[in-house]
Every structure is written in C-alpha cells, then in structure tokens.
Length: 152
Image (cartoon, rainbow, N blue to C red):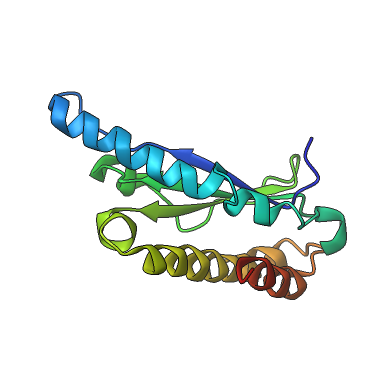
C-alpha cells in the first residue's frame, strides 16, 4: 500500500457505443494527453509523492482524485461532488471533470492553472467530511503542502 495521501485515478474518455471512428480516435488522443499530465515525466503524480498520509493524522489515508475525462451525460447524472468517507479504507474519492471547455481547448498555461486551482478547491470539500466524521486530519496543513508542491 502506498504511503501517499493523494492518489489519482483516470476514467475515460467516455464514448457512446455508436461513436464514429474519428470520435474514438480523438477521444483516445485526449485520454493520452491527459494521462501524460498525471503520470508522465515530471507530471502531477510525481509532485504528489512527497505528501505522506502519516504527516496529516491517522484517520485519512487516501484522498483519491477521480479524473473523469469528457464524461457523458449519464455519468454526470450520478456523479456526486464528493463521495462518502470509507472508514474501512480510510479513504475518500473526489471526482474532477475534465472536458474541452476547462482543459482540452485551453493553452498549456491555463491547463496547468486549472489543475492546480481545481485540486486545491476540491480539498475544501473535505472540510465538512472531516468535521462530520470527527477525523484526526490536519486538513489545513495538507492544503498548504499541496499548494507548495503544485507551485514547483
């Protein structure tokens, strides 16, 4: 098991079963592009490795950012802003929508700023979860550290 408090998961891009070959090709290219941002050389995943869960308390081991690439409407209909805390795993999932408007159709600098701004704002959603579940979690320290690693 990883000691990192922040993990990344990528879902998609989603397609309908009757999508054209051209749509499938474009979708594949977009998926590869975004995966490079997360797992490529000098990517987000490498920056997040320095954030170890033991530094932030004992009750939250994993915050999983679930990147949804160009989700279809049926996926969006069931998506929650933040998932419930899983006490057995000591984890929580936070969906992040990646689409043409907020990422793919943007210049490089805006893409990087969007990722940074979104991850930090998504951590704000944890405040109520930490309070409601009375978790021993230093969330303000995690936010500060996340800002620092994203600025490097």
